[in-house]
Image (cartoon, helix red, strand yellow):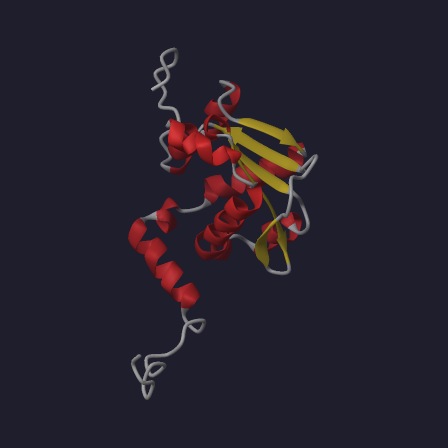
Length: 167
């Protein structure tokens, strides 16, 4: 916990991740978005996100994820984007509270714990879209089902190893 606010902060090990290049982390981040979130977004929302450069910053961990929506999927952006169209910045704890619906984004915004920079209209659209999503899609069983469903057809079938000699 931070001694002034009583809000948990990212541990030192988590902050060390902020020194790594952004791209690999952004790839992992968009993989999660594509497996869990993308299928729950309205086509109009996805159309408005097309080619827009977005960034999520976890301030206390020094992490930033740069990504876009292009050709039907979230895609990690290589290198750092000088001025993304939209930036959401908060601590790891505040992002956790948002996901758990313990805190309201407007409350965090007006208390300056959630910073939204860039295209105001785009920021409101993203915030309202995330507010409207049924949070049950993030429950572990639902996430596992979505991930397995997303992997079906991409993995070899049960007969893949049949007839292969063990070495």
